[in-house]
Amino acid sequence: AAMKVSLALCIAWAHSAAAQGTTAADLGLRLRPSACVRAQRFGHAGDGGWDVCVDALRPDAVVYSAGTFNDPSFDVAMAAVGCQVWAFDPTLEQQGFGETAVGLSSHPNVTFRAVGLGGRDMVHPSGTAPWQYPGLGYGRSANSKPWELRTVDGLMNELNHSTLDVLKIDIEGGEWPVLEHILSNAELRTRLGKGKLVRQLLLEIHLLPGRDEFLKWVALSAPPLSTGLHRFLQKFWLEHSPSAPKFPMTSTQAAADANAHALGMLAQLETLGFALFSYNLNANGPLAAVTQLPTCHELAFVWLPRPAQPAPNRTPGAGPKAAPVPKPTKGPKRAHDPKAAWASAKGARRGGVDRRRSGASPVR
Image 1 (cartoon, rainbow, N blue to C red):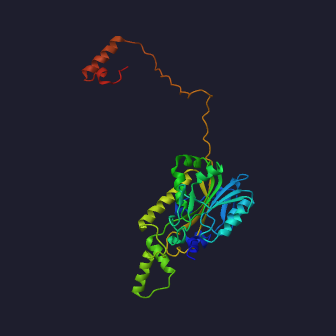
Image 2: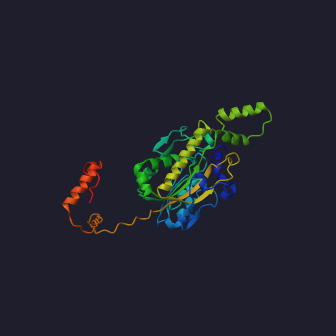
């Protein structure tokens, strides 16, 4: 039961973002529904399903789906329309959802791999996998068997995929190391900005609550305690017991800094040409009652090619054409009188100004 709490933050689902006063703008993002002509829901209408921009899909589209849990409805729906789907999740056996992997592997257009996406290629031995909030059981559980993590580009190279039509990431806080790896790698960042790495990016993002908010939420699940001693013992249990949910940061400020960095990565996606065409909010998650900003959001981005700049109209091979130099305007001709010119210059020197020495223009 403790493991099943791991996804409780995003099990309850609501599409009424406006009713909660939370919009994409609260994340610093611009919602652009017009960026996608035809958006369609694949999978369940609630949690587990995703909005996909159908007009951006190519025939035999390649889809990477990271994070399956007990709901493969998105993977099956994408495969049903002819997409080639690769599903990745190293946690199914530990969470008791081995039948999910079996069901996916039986579909002709789905390939399941018991590996996860990460910021680098590595294997976590049993009991060593770090957790990003909310992770498995909010820190109450660790990996019981070795977990293998792979980078997106590492998997693409192995599977001989140059471009992904859709990359879906729903891995309970593990999305941030994946994005960090892509955005900090110059080659991957360049390919991303040209639409040559990923064409659509579907993200379930998880923001961190403050420490007090987190402890308050955990305390709400316990029976009310009347005496001061009981409240003290409960607080001690929350902060020190191995069986209690863990706050993953050292302080509320550290959580705020991590959130700011995470939202900054989303802003970078927009500068690289990704438009947010769909936004959904988990408004009924367990932390919604104690946090000012809900911590779980579903974002769907589509890459849009930038409009080409018009080329200047030049003859091929010719250099830039210099602007014509205007000819000086000539005044009316006057008869030249050497004596009058000498007298004028002599008078100017007597007046204290020698125009030849002062740099002034000569008198004409």
